[in-house]
Image (cartoon, rainbow, N blue to C red; front, side):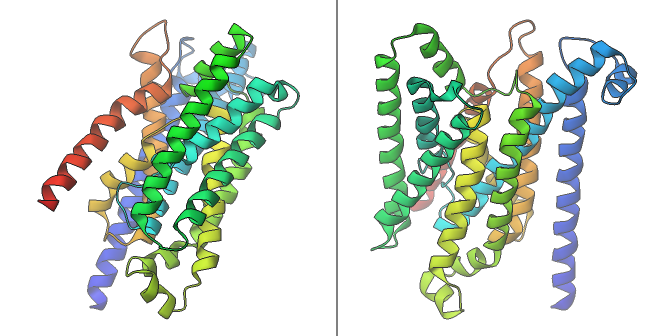
Length: 338
């Protein structure tokens, strides 16, 4: 038995190292690829003092913030999807499905409509974080009596629909067509034209979310046996809910605040990674985070090269990948039921 545990541990380490190397590779490629053909030597030199001035501007102010945000947001979406699937004991759960992303987007869009977004750099992240917190707290309050994962998912669908309707209402009522265009463009999800200020705003909040989720890792392993069994093992359900609520809200809210709505990463990645692990929820968290980072970095590279001269929004690409994958999951689940 001990030898089996050692073998499983080594397999997990190899998987984590492989995904980490893949994310690192895509991070480097993200720094090297762009409309300005700098070359490898000039690109690397642009990251350090004393390099070519034009290269320094391109690397430090355009490509580096973009790569860091793709890495951070991808990791956040991947780990959030994994922890929610373990917490809800449902493989179809992810931040977008349960309404967190939609309500976070509504909170951010509201700051656009009211004009608060232009008043301070902190206004937009605050709006998105507030929306994410409200969404998760509402979900937990609705499901508190029955503890049903189906109730949470249905409530999430209702929240997503309501947030979508209110977002459409804001677009209809927006008196400024330029503001409407900005809202629509932002809702499609994008990492281009972001600066280090966006990084410093979002990254600390996302890291705080990762830490809170990590503290809930052992608890979600116990929850895989059911809430009653987890409670009998000494797991505090109230404490676990707070950790997961705060962690997911920080991750998704901070990411949504700076990149807009990017969906399906938290759904697709845990499903791709799970067969390569021992299927314990806690052992899926770090690999899913690294896988999410690699996927979003790869998608961000793709949007720059697929249509030369006209860059696609990254949220469109992830939706094109994720929506058919989600449909396949639903069809497979239906076949297994019957």
